[in-house]
Amino acid sequence: MNSQDSSGLPKGRLHPGASLAVAACFALGACGGGGGEDTSYGSVAKITVNTPQEIAQASADDYNENLNGLITASTLKRWIADWNTNRPAGVAGKLIIFQATVGPTGAEYIKPNNATVFTYLSPSSEWTQSRINGVIETPSMVPDGPTMDALFKKYNMDPHNDMFVCAQGTGSTGNAMAQGRCWYALRYWGVEKRNVSVLNGGNQWINGNGMVAADFTATASTAPSSGLIGVRTLLTDNTALQATFEDLMAVLPANDTAVKEDGIMIWDARSVGQFSAGERLESGDSGFVACGSSICNAPAGYDYMRTFQNSGSRQGHPRGTLQLQFTNLLDSTKGFSYKPKATLQNYLNGGSDAAGYRFVDGTYNGVGQGGAYQPGDVIYSYCETTFRAMITGFASAGILGLPVRFYDGAMVEWNSLSNLPDNSGRVILPADSPWRTDVKSFFRPATSPTLVTPRKIVDPYAVHANKIILEDQLYKRGQPGGGTAGTGTGTGGNPCG
Image 1 (cartoon, one colour):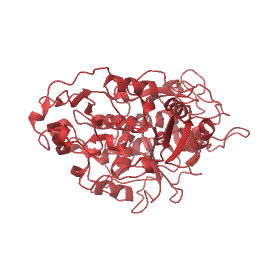
Image 2 (cartoon, rainbow, N blue to C red; image 1 turned 120 degrees about the vertical axis):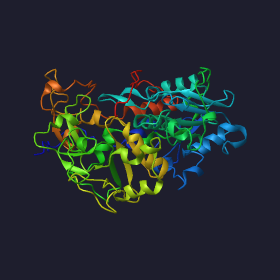
Image 3 (tube, one colour; image 1 turned 45 degrees about the vertical axis):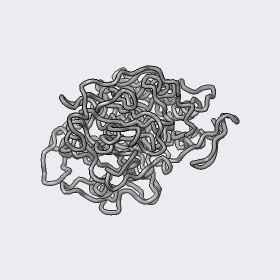
């Protein structure tokens, strides 16, 4: 039986459905549609505020034709061979390649010339940060303005003229996630789509598939720490890429049924085991026993706590969410590269692949053709810490050209915002907090409070939960109150892997 709390929000409290857009209007005096002019920085700068639709970019059917977004090894090889001659139109600066890890022996680093082409080792910890949204502190968020400025300085980045390529190094699911975090941070802070690329596939595969051994070297470039350009010079506001849990709560349906006509598709990139809190399992889930289908009932006596991560108080999903695990979008035989565009589109249409994997809803049944993405939908993409969701979100926004918002706080945050006890003996959120996400979720609680790690709750009665985005907007505009949301701590490793 589902252990779902169906109680309503307490009377007299602010409903968390108050939108980011409304709050941003009051804070910045910048109401209006996407692409609108924001003159909140006086007459000195006019900032264009983009919608998710304007941030998205569609790939060519043949990835070899792309000059930004998702690029292939053959395109990158042409660039590194003669960057000054072959660089894309509108890109007048350097070619900077960020590898999440070192590649395998013989293909450690894509070869720089250290004059016009540079390759740096830049792990995912540089592109994430623990931050406070006004209610709770959450790991693995997009970096704040000072942190991004420090990265721009470290790698001498000119975000107006340079081309940035986010690469895996050694191909793996974790490194595909990491290159997504690189892409997301750059786009969120306003780097134009023409200046950001994601390299399709890890070094072990592109060596021989678009590149040759001579295109690699054992030594990376040395970061010069001489950059002078910061995010405040980027007069584009792409903060709509991030959705807060306040935003997500505002768009959820009344029950655990995906609504086709509401303009929203919520995508859980985790496994069926986590989506169902251990009621159903799929291949790869701990304890999975094959049953002749892609999704099977958990075996008798199954310990559903196996699906929990980060010592959370509960596991499950927000109401109305659809699930398709991120691994289905990657080809592990080709260096964990993205599958063809037509294959990705088939998933979004609600279709199945040859193995039977497809979007499922809260009943754990496939939604069928036409049952997933609806034209005009905005996709809300999440996983446990929005690492896996970087793959589902980039595939949607950077390949299929669909509007996407990343719920960056993800389930590590969502499952924490509960009126459930932790191992300190206290409940995480009081019963009358307006930020209880348990009232809008299917979930199963932890079997014992002793298994639940306390969370850092800053204010259970905060007026809004969008402090991170508002402070980033203020920082970009040079206004007081910007650049203070972060704790300054990065997150290492791969929290979502």
